Length: 487
Image (cartoon, rainbow, N blue to C red):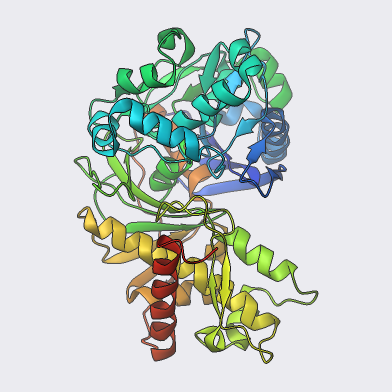
């Protein structure tokens, strides 16, 4: 290790913003964090897209801001975390041919059906990749592009994921790693290689070896920082860049989940629940994603499409809406009988891409705080369903690690504990994905494995009959949605 202060830079390209953190090489503690937001093109038909150039702008702004307080020579390694599943299609000059379709884009239902039939059904898809073909994943997005924008498809010579695209810009290297690649649905999570049968179903005539990035080990140096990129970031060229990974894989590193242990729950734009396994965990129902992690193991994950965005939406409907802590303090548990099924963007767990949000039990006496509480309870109950799905694969939660923007709310943390009946802990930093990327760079370059950060806050469960009644209402509403009885 070098003498004097030195740092590792972690970058997380999320849905709403890109964050950059500095990790102290000696202590492993966070030394700085900055972020820059980017817009989403979300439409009622299920479209959810972003301009990859906006990611580059936000990356440059966040990194320049966070490295202002250190010398460029003190940054010794970089790693990138990125939102999963997004399709970035590049031309021969590495320019995006169109906006990237994101993880929460649900316009690909028909393509999922076509691909599932082409590979031989749901069970065969599970055999080939470990995952069913769902709208969130990348494979149906590729087929959508081929069917709905053939000109862009013809101009595209490379397909990659958001974190791959940023690594390409940083280093000039076109490469991916198993964690993020396992969220494409054209990657065999058992063998850690592309699934040829799924690729052929997408397009039997395309040269997929030339189109998709080679798969490198997550814990490896994939290249060094280019001169142009270094100038744009205020850093020195030649800094090693490690494999990085998908945001959930990096979040696992950020909380030290490199061996089996607690289940991590992330309250972000999406809600996720995941934990490390030493063997693949395949869900025959397809509700749990069978992912590789970015440390050599596996990371079964259940995702809900609607989390903090649903809460923000509820607050936006009323002019003087309280924040989450205020709403949970003002409105009683169970929101006085108000139930929000939070499927504003459809849903992934369970697989209901065409579902919509539903408000049940609304009465004249309900106020703004009740609506916000109903939204918070709704997305939390959805995550309880996700935890139950994880348990079906053998990943039983004994305690929860809470991360993501929503974890900053003490009242929400207590609600999670009360609804699940589990001890909930919040680490010192809830920006686990960016911190995990930096921790990976430190692991690769200095050989220091990530370890669990100390808990900043703990919540013990407090049984509440009103919350249990609310959970039963949500279970009934979810079942009605699964039966197609709620529009």
